[in-house]
Length: 437
Image (cartoon, rainbow, N blue to C red; front, side):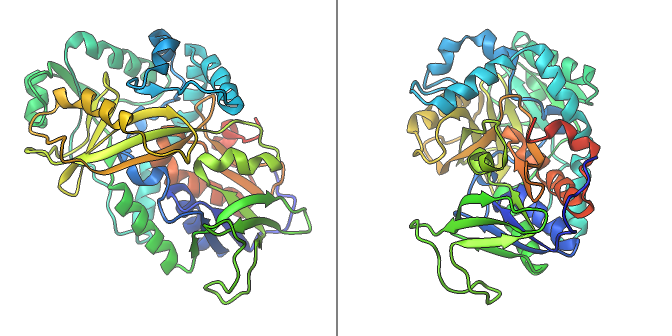
């Protein structure tokens, strides 16, 4: 355990108002710190908003996967591929891809998986703790999680993956289904579905509502959430001086005026500690405090459609890499891993590719009535493990890089980060996620 080298903190700035940042703010505030959350846009503006909302510890696995190499690198350049790499000269992207592909081996996968297993065992406790603290938006665990395939042969890929997951020490209880068994649980499954399985030990949430409710909770606890302020740089302070951030508004202008607490502010904010929960911008901001790991935006897409027979729970199409979740009377259809810059516009070719993949497997859905088309950037690392813990400056803590699992691991990350800040020691379970590794 690393001992703290500065006095116990009394104030914190959290950069990022997604599920990781707000969970961290909640636990820091309950520990007695004055907490301010800064976000360049608004609550849940990043990957927290449009994802599938699955809480699936048994599928929370490293993103670098040997199957990517098996598919062939040429396929990754196809706009219709579920994992897409645009052909462009980008040094950061090339650096990321070299490291990522180096980790697409079973040995590397098993090493990373062994680090995730202890976290996965604590996922639901962290969500239940937020509920006990007053979070009103529920998690849903009573509906079936069903994966569907065209054939039993196609299903073997997931069964092989589940066997390796269980060999790593992660429970992944499931039962096999034939096509009729899938349709009995998910009437929206089409006649193309010939096999499937039901995965047990899962839950799901409505991501926008859940994160909005979490924001309401932390505000009620006295946390200030400032939207529309983009952090441009981070200073690490010293054992005897505070850390800080520099900010600009949405027009790139240093803000003037007063905060909600009445304090005059300009382009600089300071606090005893700064938590970087800034999603795909984590690498950019953490570079000045010694973090050299590339954090690459892996953009996901989603939209909602009406369905005649709405599934009660998540409906997974692994061969198509499409995730479906019932939300507010419609079906959210999500997919893609597009390695592109965070700020680039939504690409309708990705939406069309998801539609082509999903439509044959779902009956009674009107894919022409798409709403809430969305693209958001997941923060991905080369080894598939998040960056959680102190940086070169012990006053600046990284909390991001979760890839596809920011929602699943968000509340737990917040609790563990707050614990390390308050106690001055890094929990052993976080050792593999050292941002300076």
